[in-house]
Each structure stands twice: as structure tokens, then as C-alpha cells.
Image (tube, rainbow, N blue to C red; front, top):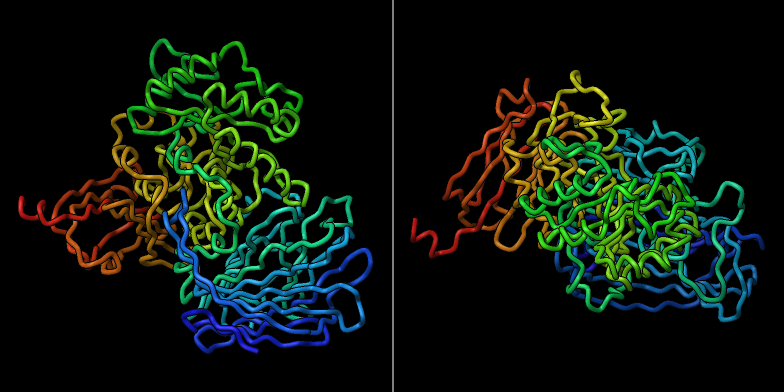
Length: 632
């Protein structure tokens, strides 16, 4: 039987086999993937390995919904679906449904048990197998040594023959050739374990593995009827087009927060941790104290930032799991800071160790609401077994009850849950800017993660470093660290990297009077529309994101300098007022140097730019209406 996407570019041929159900996938009439769905390994034995399709149901659906943060403010999910009602050929009493969907943006499948009795399943693994059919694919795996991970490793460019079989492969997993890009990942991870891939040399295929604690054979415990997370394969004709996709949002449940637009406010934040709370104003000793945060709040207000993030240390040591997160240290009067922020329209976010949250959140979150706190940054989870996945939901739901935004750090990848819980506004789960304090992040990494990790969703990379140097001049510094690449590449990150909370990671005095700082006052943290303009994984990227009547352009390159001609016709045949922040030849030697170009009557056709090694470009294109054109 055959299932097609609404635009007919994606076709899925469904077959029975002796080892389950096979999905043979075509994109624009070319085979690209064979998915074998073999049910589950459980403590009772295999369930669903020998499935027979008893009957099927087909539906088509279209839904329009709002998003409160991210790449677009509205989304349209259109799909064709088939439900395979199956039973084990060997006489198992379990009835299993396999649900397969074909969207224009990709395909997805999941298992559903309709068992009504209170039987507990002890699942060891899901037997899903993926065979890449095209032989000329380039792959971008992130390898992990164990399930205890924060997703902060590097991505590797490889051919199929070079894949390693010893280590786990994190999701999303990108594969592409000249005509096709796919990314294997998962969506709607709720009360289940996270999924990984592993390469099998003998079968030349990848099989799935479910996360678990190191001392536990069982990955998932479920009772009665339940549905697995969606196994999703994003598809497009280029890796950059996957960035535009809302597939993972489509596969999640609608928002459970009825008044989200009233209090869920994406925005940018000032931050003390990156620079080690530096203050260069006479009379203020930088550190975890009231005067420091008032100084940072003044900066946040001046730069139109919505928030101030008070990081580790406000209630005690960052690694003290017995600390009381309802109290603050004597040097810091949190009530005074909150009131000071209110008068300047700057909300306060608080960092928390997850162990303390688990122990005290029922008491702490209502108290934070009473104090006027706007959100939390929870850290150090570093795993995605079923217990931790459930804890994420528990924290996010309690936070929503108390009107708190949630930023997950030391976190696993997102899976589209921000649609269901819009207050879950960003995740880390990436090797971010912080690594420059003790190691580094290279420009090639900066232009790889938009095509890989960011496909999963919001990514709190924490941009904004204004001490910009070349790789040979970079030194690891805990206080006032530096970052590799040009100033313009840092500005471009605010457009290229998706996150409902975006940091200005440096201290206030790093920005005052500095070239490019004006852009940080203007650039939004959420978008109405996203367009991929040009790029190649690990080499460069150009994205356009729209907020109301302005298009923001972000371009970044790897260690190579680059001339680019950017086609703007996808933005419409319009005239623009424009401001461009550009690298100049001096940026190759002094990475903090840039040029600001302003003008009118930029037509919506092409834009020529040059980027220094590790460089970038950030631009604002304001759509000109008829009245403003006549005035000119």
C-alpha cells in the first residue's frame, strides 16, 4: 500500500515482512530510506516482531495553529495518515497500531497499544531499523559514549563507510546529497525514554536504542494503552530547507496553556556568568551582590532587553544539591533587585540546580511567582531516561501554573514540546559559547549546528561575545573570555540561531560604545517567518527571519573568507530601507572591526557580501510602504 504527502513529493510504500512492517520511502521518485518497524523487546520477550496487518484506516488532516516563540508565529500542518491495525502472527494477544503520517516536510511513525487492562509493559528497546539507500550521502553524526549526556559534543562529516559502530549517534542525524536532505529525529517525547541510533557494520544500517540508567535493563515502563513518541524523518531538497520546517511542532499536542499570549514573552537577557560578573564602574565591586545586578539591569533597560538572568551562586554553591532555593545569600537582596527591574521593565530569571528543583519546586515555584520572578534556568540534568523526561514535564507544568518561563540547560535535545508547553522556551543541548571559557568553539562548528542540532528546535547557544579574536590569538579565560570569529559573526548568531531567550553574554561595559552594539537593541528573539537563503553544512549559512515589516538577515562563514551573492527575491518584490553590519578587510586582523552601511531603495533581488575568515554579516531590511517611498 502507498501513502503520499499532500504535495506528492514524498511517497511511502508499506509492506508486511516476516520481521515486522517495512516503510520504503521515496522523495521526488527516488528511494532514500528503508525503515523496518519490528516492535519491542520486553522482559516478556519480543512483541510485534511478526506483525500481520488486520485492517487499515486512512485520514487526511490540516491544522492551523499559533506558536509563541521560535521560527514562525503561525504554522500549518497538512498530512495524510494511515493507521495499520496489527496483530502478532504468532498469536500474541496484543493488538498494536502503527500510525504512519506523510507531511510535505517529512514522514513520521509511532506505535500505539490499545490494551485496556492494567498490564505493565517493561520495554527494553524499540526495534526500529533505518537503511540509507542512496550511496552518495554525506552524513553529520554526533557521537556519544553513553546515555548520560548533555549533547555538547561536536558533529563529524563522514561517508557511510566511515560511520563508527562503537558509539551512540545522537538525534537529529543529518544525511544529504546534491538533491536530498533528511534528518532522523523524534517528536513528542513524553513519559518515555529518549532515542539514539547505532551503526551496524554487518547489515549496513542503523538501529534505534532507548536511553536508560546504567544500572537498569528496562528503558520504559508503561501500563495499559499508550503511544510511543513519533519517529520523525524530516525531508527536503537541501539541508538548509529543513531549518524552515515545523514538522516536530506538528507532531506534538496543541498548547495546554490557554492564556499563553498574555505572559509568555520571548526576549533577550543580560547575564552575569559568562564574564564572571565583571563591572567596570568605579564604586561597584563585580560579583554576586545587589549593586552588580542593579548595574546589569540598567544596561538591560538601556539595550531594550526583556530580562536579567541571575546565574549560579544566588542561593549558594552551584553544586550544592541540599541548598535552599527559597532563600538568597546575604550579599544579594533579591526583592530589591526584582523591584529595581520592574521599574525598568526588566524581568528576573533565576538559575537552579535540578536536584534542588526536584526537592523544593512545590514550595519554590509559587514563591517565585509571589516575588515576581519571570522564569527559571534549570541545569545539570545530563540525561534523558524515562524518569528525567517525566521530570521535565513535571517542572514545565508546575512552572506554567506559576507563570514561569523554562530554559533547560545541561539538557537533552528538544522534541517540539514547546508547542504543547509554550513556556518551555529554549534548551541548551549544544556545545555553546561557554566552551570558550575553558576550550573553544570554532567557526566551522558555528555553521554546522544550524543544520544539525537546531533542527530539533530552540538552541540556547548564548551569543554576544564582544572580545573577538582569531583562533591563533584565542586563550581560555574564565573572566572576560574571548570568542573565535568576527564581531559580525556574533551579531549574525542572533538571526541564525533560534531561541526564545537570547543572551547578551558579555558584561555591560563590553558593549557600551562598541561597533555593532546598536543591532543588539533591535534584533528580536522570536519570529513570524523564516527563510533559508543560501549555505552548505559546515561551510556557511545565510538565513532571513521576519518580524512584522522587517526582515533580519544573518550570514556566517567557517574559517574561510567568502564572497556571496544572496538572492532576496524569496522575500518578495519589495523596496527596503537597510542597515548592514559587515566585515571589512581589517576584520581579518582585528576581528572586532566592522562597517555599518545604511541606505534606501535596496530592491528585493540580490545582495553582495564579503565575510572574513570566521566572519559574518547581519542586516535589517525594513519594508518601505508607498507613503515612505513618496516622501523619499
